[in-house]
Amino acid sequence: MNAIEVRDLTRDYNGLRALDHIQFDVAQGEVFGFLGPNGAGKTTTIRILTGQLHPTSGAGRVMGCDVVTERDPLKPQIGVVFEYQNVYERLTARDNLLFAAQLYGVDAQRVDETLAQLGLAERARDRVKSYSNGMKQRLLIARALLHQPKVLFLDEPTRGLDPNVARDIRAFVADLARQGVTVFLTTHYMEEADRLCQRVAILDHGRIVALGAPAQLRAEHGAGQDVTLEDVFVKLTGRQFEGPFAE
Amino acid sequence: MLSNTIGRRMRIVWAIAAKDILDGIRNKVLLQTVVTVLFMIVFYKALPIVTGGGPPQVTVYDMGNSTLTLDLQASPNVEARRVSSLEDMQRFVAMGGTPEIGLVIPAGFDAALAAGERLGLDAYVQHWVSDSAAETLAGRVEAEVAALLGRPIHLNLDAHWVYPPLDSIGPHTWAAFSMTLMLVLIGMGLTPQLMLEEKRAHTLEAILASPASSGQVVLGKAIAGLLYCLVCGAVVLAFNAGMIVQWAFAILAIMCGSLLAVAVGLLFGVSIEVVQSLRMWVSAVIIPVFVLPVVASFMAMDLPRVVNAAVRWFPSVALARLFLLSMTNQAPLAEYGLDLALTLGTAAILLAVVAWRVRRSDR
Image (tube, rainbow over all chains, first blue to last red; front, top):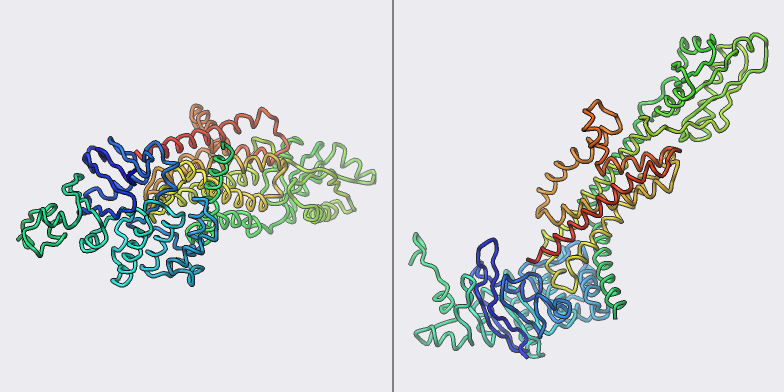
């Protein structure tokens, strides 16, 4: 069984098509990169696959659960790190995780273990508003992993972080994948996707314009040894501008 | 299996409510709302103390034509007015915002005075005046009457408490108005804030990605909002404790009012996206729907008949009447049945609309 199966998934917002019949599979234990420019439909896909949004048509299954009709068994199997640092700033890190633990029916001991695993144990009782961006991001990951999900959705997890923290997070994600956790990753950092992902899909205007291993995409769409995933991305999704930035 | 599912769902609802209660205690905006509303109540209660202090007010029902009435009206030490029946006297006394005395001068009082008989007068005071304050007030009036008559006299206060009639205006109407307004302000101010904070910080998405459903989120918020309303309601009831005659009705009114206010607040919370819009909508709704109808119904304003009839059907008026009923000793079932039905019915309809909107929010 694949961890994620998406068939003909379409989503319209007030007559505008955000996702246009996309389909792909993600194998269990795979790190899958979902790339695309802003507004391409990455977050909409995550919202549908995590049971927060109905698709207009098409189907999605995560760990065998239909994302529309089987949300109750689906949700305990997934963890989500959102593109925003959406934690309760007035609460302590521990209180944030205790709240999540209550939602998932996880005991308090697991909260302390997860805080320690993410290196937050020492400041667990500090209010989150005193945390740096990097610490908040680690707290978001801790929350997503608290209930030991089988599939982890990461929506731009390293955006705006300093290189050291970003590197730690990438190492952590790679480690999770080695433990068998399936990772669905969106990012604007092509190098990150190239390094972490076994396969990537490139999304543009709600459609998948390329799907495959990074090396395969470089080979298919590049014209030389030095072609990067970023070159492929720009080639497939780039716009023709007029004015001072036009090439 | 079923009990496990219910238990799990209730655990999630309680987790959301408990988080909001804990977070709310640290939320300056929420605390500011509560403190502002409570300050308004304290200010309203303190106003008579600040503005009072003049000579005692005496409402006289003179069954004969005693010279004492004229003497009292002429006296600078009391502010006396004469009424023509016992009911009028009780009504006037009940309308007083500060402690007042109602005095009954029996027919043949002057003849009894001339005959040197031992004299006593029945005196009345509002039911919410404490025993000691009533005795002090009666003592002042007793001394003035004795000075005017030139001989000692006893004012008999025994069980002569005046309860406000349902259709009268006085401190009880303003207490009912302030309690209604306070509940509505807390419910409409705090409950949507709980939703909007989650939307603003995008924490709602994290909750909805967890096993919590949107219905459980709303229920959790409703419980937190209800708790805030009930706590503030208890404080306001404590401030108005002296006015309450029927505590069961008062508690019932607080509970129904909290439910109504939270239902309105939740509707705002699920419909509005930003705090600025919330302020605009609360301002737009609170005056025409909650303040004006209640004031109009209490003041029996000279409005067209159809408007007066329509005002009676406002849930805010029904809620204010429930509070009013708790402050009188006249509350037959028929008087509050409709008000109860209107308040709870409106809350139920609003909660149903909220549930419907929430169910469709992922589409």
